[in-house]
Image (cartoon, rainbow, N blue to C red; front, side, top):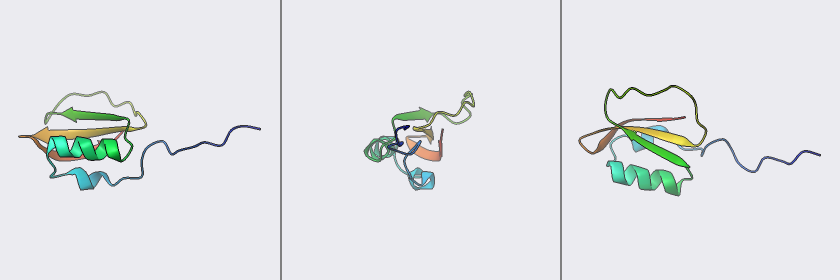
Length: 71
């Protein structure tokens, strides 16, 4: 018999709750909530579009999260 998965692909967390937080506060919150990878990016950064379960992405301007998405 196959093992039962122990957790979801990523935490059940509202990404909109990170918008407006400082970069540092957002990263601390994400790690407490179980995100395994946290990535901060400047506005307009060029990134690849591959989905990575457990990763939380922040777009940060002047030290504040202005956009947040998973994957």
